[in-house]
Image 1 (tube, helix red, strand yellow):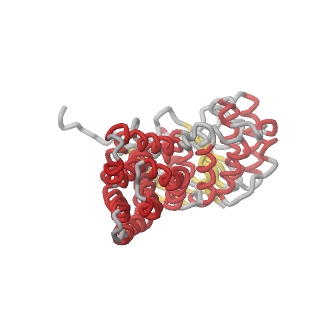
Image 2 (cartoon, rainbow over the protein chains, first blue to last red):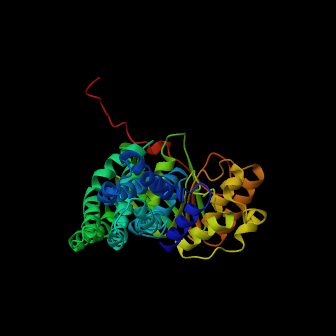
Image 3 (cartoon, each protein chain N blue to C red):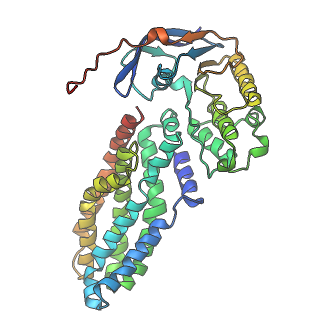
Length: 218
Length: 202
């Protein structure tokens, strides 16, 4: 499992791995928003939590199909499935690799982009906390969707359609926690629910994704 | 002592039964060559034995945790070097990459090369070298010599002979004579009787 994690990280940072792509996409989406809605600080500050979270969601989505598609193409997935490691563990390792190369950079870049959107300074810790708690769920749900669509040619669009609705709870609780933090209210309920969603995903989705992979490999 | 025993095995591909009543034993230290026309179910049989798909019926002993499977594709990562590719499989199987692998598969001069810059034959040799890294005694080989030239085929056959001499076992689906002194099994008699899959709309 550690081998899978290290290899996926290695593949992501090498040429063609797409490392940084999600981060650049995240930054561009957030930067485009003031051009679209105008530069009024009050308006931007009010929509900033939602924008940051939606942008993070889309950025995470961008690299999902890489989780299994490349391994399926070159036959590595079948060989990994016959190796003495549980497929559930492989899914978890691959989702973790996806989070480390996509989710974590988003978390670290978010405060800088928050400033750009006039997000109040008081909300910054909650932005960091909500993204840290929520983005692992994005990677895990994404890994599940990628496992479902791995056998399909051009499954990327279908993957988005499957995964985006499943992202809704994470989006609601994540953006809500930041918005409440920005207004000086208690953001804890949102954060706790967000943590609950993530923990549920960690507990359940590796099994679901592994089952989907086994059906695909048949 | 038989290393691999298959009895009354039936397997299907994509829901269509291909083979039924397949039975054979491969004693330790020997190989069995699978023969049959394209589409007869050689790959399906090997994938079933490797545990990638469930058998419709029948029993298999000796595959599972003893076996290493080699598919048409080698699972080679283009951006990783030859060494890194093998090190990954070694880590996955909890083994070390034996130094002897590099000369045995003619990879010594290519160790640091990214696998993406290898030729098809060289990549194939790297894919086959994975088998030596797994340390598994029972090898399930699906067309191992595809895109290998005569020299590389002989090289691989030599390695396989060494593996068998060391008490290993191999089940090989191939159209190319490997020069192994091994019995052959023609799969044609095991073809599943045409399950009448009548289309109600025709």
